[in-house]
Image (tube, rainbow, N blue to C red; front, side, top):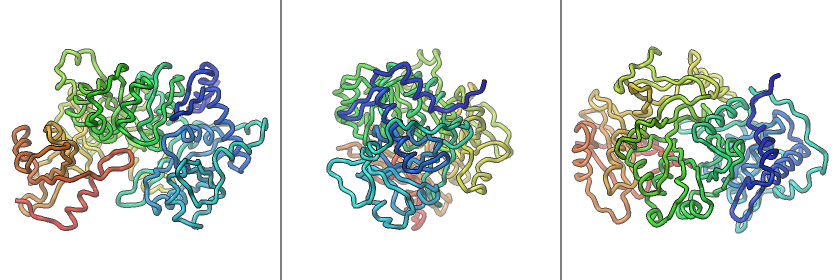
Length: 530
């Protein structure tokens, strides 16, 4: 007997064993698994009636609402491919993605229709389905989501679809920095095994209450859209990252699990309500997207009682390929030492395949915590390739290995620790300086709220590190004080040679720092740093 691996089967299981259990909480609305399943099937029936067939692509631009969850199941159980869109992209990028992805329909939240309106008649979509939002109005010519569901044929049944586990489930676009966004082809099998890693390594149980702080459009919520359903847990939707509301939900909904970038962790620990809230559930929080500073992990654990779990991956790997496994022996270490361990990316997960750090010749680096190499991976969760882009696919997947572009070391215990992105490594006078390492020191300073370290041009050394800092509210510190603090806590040549204080740092919709935008500012008009 052979049954294809697909996360869609977990909807069937959840309805079978948890029919009256709360599946989804979205503001004032709640749905049991039975009701959620009915709405998903209604969406599938409506889409099929509107002409969506197996293999078709449907674009979806929604925040973390029950509608977004319904789309992941309702589109994909038809054998169609869901194309999650980042609603913070500009119109040009969205137009490119919708065209490039060959999407025939679009499901869009009314709050985010402005860029679609801007495109006018340039899109050749067969239909636009609009989720109404109180207080917002659109000029788009489309059908309202609930009306769309109501007009689905009653009792017509869904078409019989034979899922091939290697066929596309979702087409996820990466952010374009120097070129157009790339469409990452993720299969049923890859999504299933990534969600299995989510289930196992984040210890998901039926009584878990999961808060969707991470955008569902980002690598399918890292697999959370599937894994929570698989366990029969409860999805709590969150329209946008709102720290006071998140802290309130911790108390009101007994949140036990969430995911988010280090930026989100930073927002939570620095919110004024953080020291007042009484969190009784000791929520587990997985963080990734950028290497989290050990000082930030320590704050999250001490101020909010969060049990931080560091994971690592990329959209191209579904996304998990490493996690920081906690060992019993770590319990005896100090809180500082524990936080330092948790800042490592860690070891392979059980179901993803093989991951290692290699030199340019492909030989693995020594496990000594010093030799620098690139993280490469192969196995079950690696993408099928970039959509309609064999050349870029071939550049990323070489000799059977996907090359991440992240530079790391491997410690004697096998734990991998990122030092930097290849493009973010600072080479000053022939010495390698990890911007991540410098940021880790800066986060220990009490006046620093957020920071990014980049290379800036220098006539003598070629390039030197500069720190760009957002200060804590009311903090007052000078450039020289920051530089001297770094020199006291790390090798002098690694310390920033310049510091700039700013109101905010540029970030993606998922909270990643956009260092390329900072670099552009300094390299377009080079300035000398003495």
